[in-house]
Image (tube, rainbow, N blue to C red; front, side, top):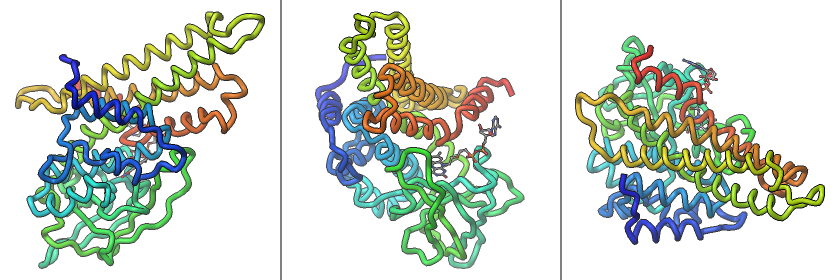
Length: 371
Ligand SMILES: Cc1cc2nc3c(=O)[nH]c(=O)nc-3n(C[C@H](O)[C@H](O)[C@H](O)COP(=O)(O)OP(=O)(O)OC[C@H]3O[C@@H](n4cnc5c(N)ncnc54)[C@H](O)[C@@H]3O)c2cc1C
């Protein structure tokens, strides 16, 4: 794979890497930096970057911006709302939502999980009843990232529960639809700056213009979303790990115990080597998977396992890295002020969202023909 970056890709990466917003960083900060415009074609006001270029830019952003929750919520908007709109939206839908999404003026949310269908997401209870004027949705979605602030929701419901996953259909529902309301969700253990909520659909009428893709195409759309989201949503964590490791090296070089720098103790230096190993394998996998996303797959080609491998590896690597960092910084690392505990709690959430680590293994095993 050719990894020589063009001047534009390098400039984007460097600009994001230098973007070190203080604690006041918010959605607007990222919107002004054009983060939400990354994959959107220029005709809709976007930067038209390839998945590989997006990955590189977001690695830079994760190094610069320390708020992992903010970066995860931007990722949900980018990969689970912008991408299905781009791939499956009609011309009218793309024109209605993409310019605002690229500017960050419109916030998107992706609602599929329910109380009784989490890992088995397509076994949903939410139904879409056919009416003369379109569809009427009823159901309750849980743990929906961005829901409290979202303007548009990609919502999944089945047009016929007897059809199983083949009845699932995706809909675009606007926040001011009187049949949709957002209720508070339980509090998270981390990712506090990534708001989530429950999305309640009660006799929520959606016209034919609100169907995303074709009726019963929801499982394919969800599959596309997962391929993009699992590949790219954790790209900022690669940059976050890089910065954390640099700080650990600095600490191991300067902190002295027993008359020696702690980095001279093999247990500390080898821990850092392991951290670096995980960083490089995460980066390599991310870039391979991102490059592969842009390549059309042949009809006889086996489905790619790279999205699941990236999601599994980077989330586990991030948890292990922040855990290691806490050990290297000792008591200081265990303080709120050091920020490591926050990053560790944030990383724990990334092992569950977009499918748990065990589910990534299950999907990979299935794609390898082992099930
Ligand atoms: C931070 C965060 C953000 C999220 N954002 C969104 C969002 O924006 N939109 C949305 O719709 N949802 C969202 N979710 C929900 C998320 O998609 C689900 O939590 C996830 O898919 C797991 O479902 P569950 O929590 O119901 O766990 P369950 O499905 O109940 O799983 C519980 C345990 O059983 C294991 N398990 C289940 N089935 C199998 C199997 N077949 N093989 C092996 N192990 C299995 C799981 O690995 C897990 O360990 C988010 C979750 C988190 C944590």
